[in-house]
Image 1: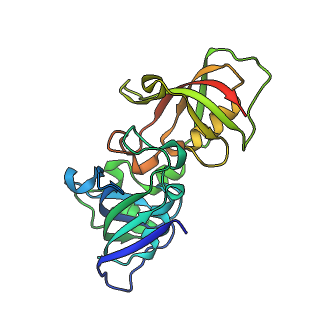
Image 2: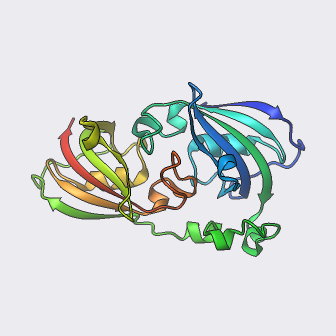
Length: 247
């Protein structure tokens, strides 16, 4: 299934979120070897997102919907329900299973989110996390700027395995990950959800040998969850990608 839940503290047993609700949580994420990569607890600021609609990793969308208000649990999430073959932010390796200790503080229906009821210190509108705003985000999601043309003919199709070099930066120029720096090209199956949606869309528009910058909006990247403590929530990203091989 991809998610196993271990209850640390029971909730009220009755108040479960449903898909589309906005939830407020504390979480700490660790690799299976215990290495911590992100924590809202350490930041002292609860995390808020719309659950069950793809704003966060699939393991959260599945696992949090099985929690009740006040519950604290460990969500043990397999890589296919987390960041898959892409990993994240240089701190979550490819194909990594993850553990998240999650405490569910609040469950709000959309009408209450719009009014920011009970969220004076973490108001969805002031934090940019209002569900309506996110839902109306750019549906194109990806803009491509060609740096070096490819052969103009050989395009990958969904399901192909592609080999690429990439460098990922925030829009302020801060680099968060680079296969170039590691000296090892990255390989994945494209167009099938193994990587962020912006890659699945953008790389399918490249041709063999092409180098381009993919400018990806947050809803086609890591959304409200961010990633690995190095990609903030709701961050637009730029990836310089060179398509080396298609198999």
